[in-house]
Structures are given as structure tokens and as C-alpha cells.
Amino acid sequence: GAGVSQSPRYKVAKRGQDVALRCDPISGHVSLFWYQQALGQGPEFLTYFQNEAQLDKSGLPSDRFFAERPEGSVSTLKIQRTQQEDSAVYLCASSLVTRRGGSGFPYEQYFGPGTRLTVT
Amino acid sequence: AQKVTQAQTEISVVEKEDVTLDCVYETRDTTYYLFWYKQPPSGELVFLIRRNSFDEQNEISGRYSWNFQKSTSSFNFTITASQVVDSAVYFCALSEARGAQKLVFGQGTRLTINP
Image (cartoon, rainbow over all chains, first blue to last red; front, top):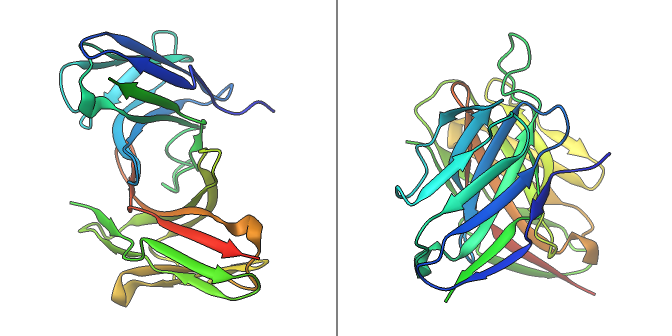
């Protein structure tokens, strides 16, 4: 079946521009995560949705970052007034649920190909 | 706070050699989960394995094997008889057992298998 898709794959923005990055999770996946991966680094958590509810946004670096998932499916990560330090690959991941029944064993997260954002 | 350290930034071996990627983690939780992901040049993270903190059994899957040692907070990954297709960046990650169960990643190890 179709995996997680992200668009655009590449985005170049001038400093100060607003950008919107889209994530289409795997159909039926309840949980959706956004991560930011700087060059040569591991991904870092930004925010998490369960259906349409944003349950954790502790990783968003500033109030210029905003994410939404209004219908519990597609998600958009918006960055306002982009800065050079925002240049990174933005990864989206989805999973069925974060807990498997009562066992607490998490389902694996399936990642999309990412959007490479370059701010000039 | 949770932390994952992959001290090996880059490893380069010749095809058919065995190679071990190290992963050391820190957490105050008694229940947690450990993961390995592979990131090929295409950029998409590919799930390889997940372990529960209560299960210290080593696991083997084909040429891949994982050694989980709670006493040393390590979760090392070994590729036996490496192949060129194994070339990628490998990430070790840690997840809490509660809340969002977000992944905390190490910095990754770039593995290059030379023919």
C-alpha cells in the first residue's frame, strides 16, 4: 500500500517568507509526528497528533512554527518568517496508535521521504 | 531527560566484513523502547527493529543482529557479511513508554561498504 507522502520534496524560501509543508499519512494511521533533521544530525521531535488533536508540541522551536491536522488525516507544518536556521529536512511519520492495546508496546513509526527546506 | 549517543560518526569497511554499530542511551524511565532505523541516500527512514526494556534477549534477523545490555545501557547492532546495499546512515532511537512515545534519536552512524 501507499506509504507516507510529503510535499513538496524540496523548498527554497527567502528569509522572511512563510512556508507550508504537507504530510499525507498512511490511511487509517491515528498518530502523526513531525521531526526536524538538520544536516548530519539525527531527527528531532517537533510535534505529535492523535487524530486531529495536537497532544504534544514541546519540540516546536519557536512560535513561528505551527502545525495542524484539522480532519485527523493530512497534516500541515507551517513556518512563518523563515530564518536560515530553519534550513533542514522536515520528516513526517505516522503510526496506527501509540499503544498496542494494554501492553504499552508502541507501533513502529513509518516515515515519509521528507521535505528539504533551504532558507536563503 | 532521554539521550542517545552513537559515538561512531562514520565507519567504512570492505564488503563481506562484519561491522558493529554502537548505541548507548540514557533514561530515567524503567520502561522504555529502543529502535534502530536505516536511512539510505533516498532519505526515508526505514524501521529495522524495536525492543522492550524488559526483554534483553538478543535478536537475529538474517545478517542483522542486535545486542541489548541493560547493565551498560547499550543496544548495539551488528551486520554480518556486509554488502554494498547496507551502505546508509543508521540511527538508534529511544522512546518513552507513556505520552506521545516520540522517538529520541542518536546522531547516526554513516556506514559505507566498499566493494
